[in-house]
Amino acid sequence: MASATKADATLAGVVSVEAVAALSAAARESEALRARRLEAVRLLEGMTLPHRARHLWRYTDPARFLPSADLTAPAPTEVTSQWRRDDEVVGVALVAGGVVQRVELAEEAREKGVTLANLHASPAEALAHLGTAVPADHGFIETLNTAAWRGGLLLHVPAGVRLDRPLRLRFAAPPAGSLALPRVLVLAGRHASCEVIEGHGGGGAGAQVLGVTEVLLEEGAEVRYSLVQKWEPGVLGHLTAYAHLGPRSRFTMATAVFGGALAKTDVGATLAGEGAESEIYGVTFGGETQHFDHHTEHRHLAGRTRSNLDTRVVVTDAAHSAYTGLIRIAPEAAGCEAYQENRNLLLSPHARAESIPELEISNEDVRCTHGATVAPLDPEQLFYLGSRGLPRNQAHRLIVFGFLGQTLARLPEATRERLEAMVAARLHGD
Image 1 (tube, rainbow, N blue to C red):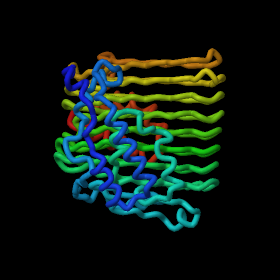
Image 2: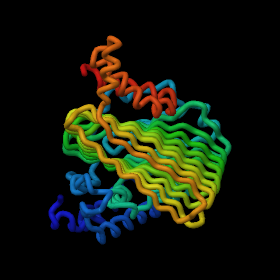
Image 3: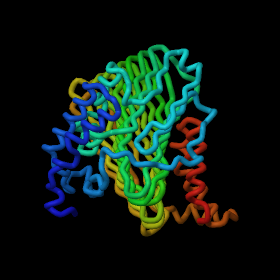
């Protein structure tokens, strides 16, 4: 439990008006964007660090995400070969050290009016959407990001445009003792369709990453979004990713969390238009002393909306995972369907997992279900596989892939293959 002093600590002074103004000026941002940043600084001045009694911080000390480095200073980051060009995609962008290092977009996408660009220099009509899915007061992490983000990306897919190949957004975590605050804004016009893969990797021990992603879907749009995190050991990170859905739009998100010493995620969707659909699938695999803390939320604000969530967690050694999932249905959201499932598999007697499903339903004309399990490897399954001649390590792998298979099968092929390789690497040598 955090001390009373730390839990009640004010966040005033964490970032100054002068530093944010200088950051904005150096990036040659518009006055409107600068004003948005300064408003977030003023919000911080009235905030205190969340108390550990608050359920979303019950398992993680929020003080560990307080910046240990200057929020407004760029962190030089070595870009390794893992950030090479990917010919399977229609566009790729690389952000490292708080700087957009490279943006490449295929001619076929440019001809259709697709934009993939540096968020700092984006047009006012695009920047006006910042804070729609993740308001500045969503939480202290999001307020910090709104005030001092650097190295942001904008993706705009115009109305009626459908992209057959995915776009890949790559973020390199900073070196030891440094801080990164990436920001992503995705705008999908009416009846547009695209697939986006946001990848986070690299980093040094003690590095911090506080990222925010917003995805806005207009009427009839479809976005398939993958959030893949494979930081190096020792990284401390918090990633927030929310979508805002218009009428009859469809959003699918796949999350994969494998790296870092401490990783907290807050993902979800606001179904604001009638007939909107959202599906979120998650895979987490932790070992050694890794600590994962996940929160998901589906907010149904309109009628006849549908959401589905399926997250699978595997932990071994002394790793710890905590999950909190909320389904919220507004009084006017009649005829909704919502499902939520979280399953946890413990491969070690020292591994731990907690699961807290929550429902907040204000309309009787809905259908909602949820389920959660935390269980060790089934000794009967191991015995059965052993009796068929499988060595114990192969039996482990078969059970783990069977446990994750239902979720992995729902992911885009390219993402699924990469995640399966990550799982296999974690199981290697068992």
